[in-house]
Image (spheres, rainbow, N blue to C red):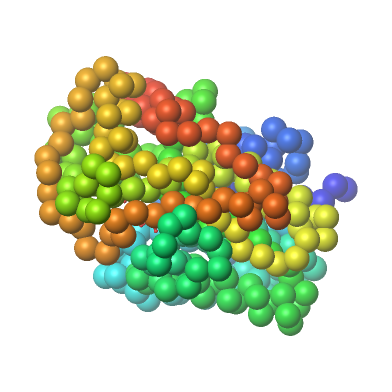
Length: 328
Ligand code: WQD
């Protein structure tokens, strides 16, 4: 039997795109997802086990039954604001749940893991572009859980020989080019889904959080990375590990910063009408500018992004438009 990749959280936004990319590359995949914040149809027919990463007996039997040699670990809560209101929920699921997953994986002989980390582990960066040697200084419980799991992975490498790649994503955005999968805006608080919701629905206007930042147009600058590029980075990380590569952490961004105003102008260009918005005070905890130094992703993983803001906004808009037309 060909070895499989276990994708935890494979029905979620980035997970589903990665599952699809793995299958398109003819790599056997099994998904483990609770479906608490996702639906089964997002895996597009891939093998799906509904269950929790903390269920060690389940994880161990899935790994053995599917001859899993690599885990791609997405399953986690990701709402920064919620993490500050309910820290225990985040430490229990994102950290403790991962430790259970790793123990079960070690017993089943899984030797490789790709982890969904986050640029938020850097907090407010000392300088941009941000490279991987910058100080780890989380500014939220969510970000702290990502930083802790990176350290846990280091020690599971030392103790159990697990090799891992932590991918520190910048701002994941966009949808698949055929509009089959994307990020549901029901719970999303991120700029692009919220802006498109303001444009397509009768809901509230977008609030632009801060217009007096020390940036060219006064609004915050971020590095938006297309979700299909992110999926490709996971395949590159799996190949790095399969080739005997060492444990490492790598930024996954484009290296290009875009301001909130540039995003709104881009959405307006795709939609043909302006995004209803109002100027609002700064949001607490927002760094004024952050974008990736992508050199290490190129040298270590041989990966580079293919898409930019135009493809992100085009695919996101078309996907939301279709979703809204069918589900309201
Ligand atoms: C983008 C910009 C806002 C909403 C988040 C997580 C981070 C990481 C990446 C994963 C900011 C502005 C937003 C709105 C606005 N995730 N904005 N009005 O905060 O850069 O990063 O995703 O690990 O941990 O925090 O993303 O999309 O919320 O904001 O003006 O209604 O848009 O101020 O400048 P953020 P975002």
